[in-house]
Image 1 (spheres, one colour):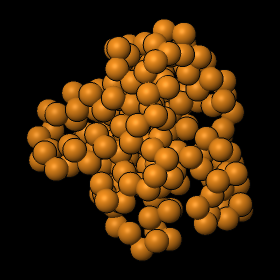
Image 2 (cartoon, rainbow, N blue to C red; image 1 turned 60 degrees about the vertical axis):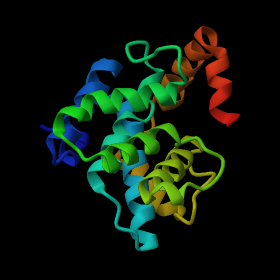
Image 3 (cartoon, rainbow, N blue to C red; image 1 turned 45 degrees about the horizontal axis):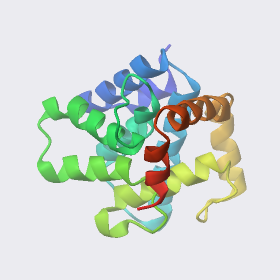
Length: 187
């Protein structure tokens, strides 16, 4: 039976991004995969409620790989968000996306921790920023999403293991490249 993540992927590029995440995270249905799926679903719902029509494929590919730079297999000496951007460019490059879409994808990944709104870079960039913050904050920050909607999402796509997985990855990154972790928030 296919996982919800597989069902969300309707394009070859999205399937390739999901496959890359699974390769890094150790298989399907990982805590990170579920986090990424929730981020996508939150971003899509935020867009719907604002009447915004984002590029679904860009949003989904960005969601799958936005934290991938935390994994040792994707890490370099850059910040993990830059590593995620470069990984996404390598994975999606063979699909021949125009440079504008590639920039949008890269910005959505690289800028998902920005403190300021990112609408000027594209709806997908700001939607990723907001959606990740909603999921990581466990709904303390909601950008207008109601608690019942978030509760239903969390019943459908379990949060179990997410804090531990992200904590482990961030801890490793802090030990191995501490200045790059600080740089993400000091731009």
